[in-house]
Amino acid sequence: TAGEGSELEQGLCVIVDSFYRYAEGPPGAKALDQAAFQNLLSNELSHQLTVRPGYWHPKATRKLDANKDQKISFDEYWQLIAWICQVIRHRDYNE
Amino acid sequence: TAGEGSELEQGLCVIVDSFYRYAEGPPGAKALDQAAFQNLLSNELSHQLTVRPGYWHPKATRKLDANKDQKISFDEYWQLIAWICQVIRHRDYNE
Image (spheres, rainbow over the protein chains, first blue to last red):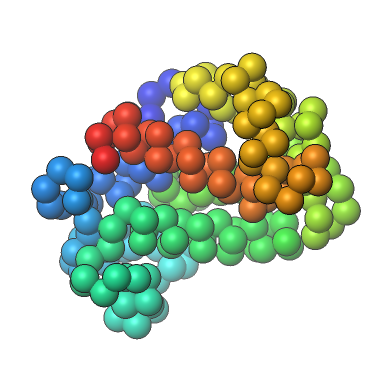
């Protein structure tokens, strides 16, 4: 659903789309189970950013899973996104 | 600095890069002044998402400027990014 728009707008759509491409569950409560989250890490976040699945599983995933339901909700996924952007910010702009 | 990587990784870099393309100030304290923020809205966020500068200025910008220093810091910009992603999420996935 990225479609038209600026590079930034497309990037925002990709963030949302990436979650829902892997999420499962009833409407309004879609989430990533352990396997889906590992697939998302492996396929979407292991190239440039070296967020390696081996590093994440299982301790970091548990930390991300704030409500301890064994699933990663959109809000929990958002914490990962925020964290990675801080890593990029530090790496590329030293802030 | 997007370079290689998945579409998601590139999107994350674009979010960070977009801020720093408009931000000014000393290293470690770069921020968007009013003019820079309006330019970012106009150039990067007004195509697909209809975040129109006219809508934002001045009340919404003041709300975003949490510490009321008349500038938008990276953390304040991040609140805007989070808000837009929630709008996309609702629009495209009804969540």
